[in-house]
Image (cartoon, rainbow, N blue to C red; front, side, top):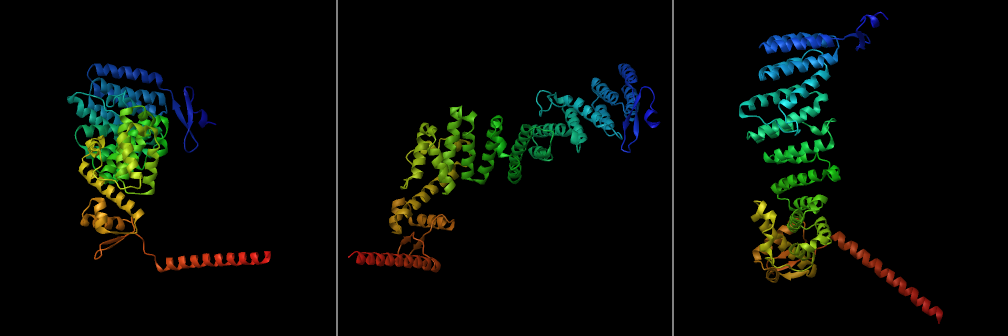
Amino acid sequence: MASATSGGIGASGSATNDGQLEEKVDLSKETDDKIVQAQTLLASGSLKEALALLSALEKRCRTGNDLPSLIKTCEASLDLCAEVQDDVALRATIETLCSRRSQKTQAVRSMVQKALPWCMDPDQTYVPLKVEASQKEARDKLVECLRDITDGKIFLEAERARLTRGLATIKEQDGDIAEAANVLQDVHVETYGSLSKREKIEFILEQMRLTLLKQDFVRAAIVAGKVNQKFLKEESMQDYKVQYFQLMTQYHSHDKNAFELAKDYHAMYSTPQVLEKEDQWKSYLQSSILFLALSEHSLEQQQMLLQIQQDPLLEKLEIGKSLIESLLKQEIVNWPLPRFDEIQQWDVYAQNDLGDHWSRMFHRRIIQHNVRVVSQYYTRIQGSRLATLLHLSSVELEHEISQMVSAGMLQAKMNRPHDIVQFSKKKSSEEILTDWATDIDTLLNLVESTNHLIHKENMTQ
C-alpha cells in the first residue's frame, strides 16, 4: 500500500511489467514555462541552447511518465528547428528524440506525423511536397530520415508506406527507375493491418507499374499475384480494376500471350464505368476479339467467342462481328480477310510495337482454322489439293500441319511419297480390341433379340 501512495499529491501510479506502480508526475505547467523560455532563446539566435533546454525537459517528462507533456515538448523541439529552417538540426533532433531509451510510442508517432507535412503533400497522401530546387535536397533527406525511423515499427506502418511511396516518386522523378522500384519492393504492404483495402491495392499497383518500367517481368508477375481478384469486382474498385488489367496487358504483351491479353481487355470492357463510355468499350472489345482470333484453338477460347457473339453491343462492331462469325463457322476462311486493312487500324495495333508479329500470327491462326475445318470433312486428302484449298505452298502446308500435330492441336499423318494427308487417327491394339469386344457384345444382343422374336412368333401360331 505504501508504494501505491508514494507519489503523494500531484502524482499518480501506472503499472510496470513487474506489477509495481511507476510514479507519474504532472509537468504540464513546467512544460509551458520551458517552451516559452526556449522560444525566447530562439528569438535571440540561440537554437542550440533552446534545444538543450527542451532536451532536459523531455527526459524529465519521459521518466516521469507525463505523456501529454512529453509529446508537447517533442513537437516544440521540432517546431523550433522548422521555424529557423535548420534542416540539419531538424533531422538530428527527431533522430535523437526517437532513439531515446524507453521512448513512448505515442511520442514517436506524434513526431513523425508532425514532420510529415514538411516533406509530403498534405492534400495528396503519397506525393512529395513540391519545393524549390534549392530545398529539394533537404526535403529528400527528411523523407529518408523519417523512413528510417519508421522501419520496423508496427504502429507507424501507414506512415512508412506513405514515405516509401514518396521516396520512390522522388527517385522516379530523378530518372532512377530501377532504384524507385527497389525502394517500393521493400514494403510488403499486403501484410499491413493499418492500411485500408483501397490503399493496399493502390500501393501494389504502383509496385507493378515501376517493376514493369524496370522491365523486371518475373517480379511483376509475383507482385500481380498479391492482388485479390475478388476485391477488383467491387463497385468501388472500378478504377483500380481498369488500371490493374492495363498493367497486365503490358506483362502479357511481353510474353506475347494472346489469350491472356484477350481476357485482360474483356475484363476492362466488362467494367460498368467503361460501358458508359462508348469510345472506351469499343476499343477494349475490339482488342479482346482480335486477341481471341490470335489465340490457340481451345475450349476456353471457343467459349469466350460464343460469349462475345451473344453480346448485344457486338452489333455496333461490324468488323468484329464478322470476324467472330468466321472463326466459329466450320468453313474455310480466305486470307487476307476482306477488311484486314481496317483491322490493322485498331488501337491495339497502333499502341503496340508487336504489330508485325501479330499480323504473322493472324495469318497462321487462319491457316490452322482452315486445316481443322478440312479435317472435319476429310479423312484422307491429297496434299496438293489441300494446299490449293488453303492457298499455300506444299512446304508451308507441311510446316503448319507438323506444328499443329506437335502441339497436340491435330491428329494427322503425312505420306510424302504418295502426297497424302491422313486425318484419321490410327488406333492402338488396345483400342482395336475394345472396339471388337463392343461389336461382339452388340452382335450377341441382336442374336438374342432375334431369337426371342422367333420364339414369340412360334407361340402365337
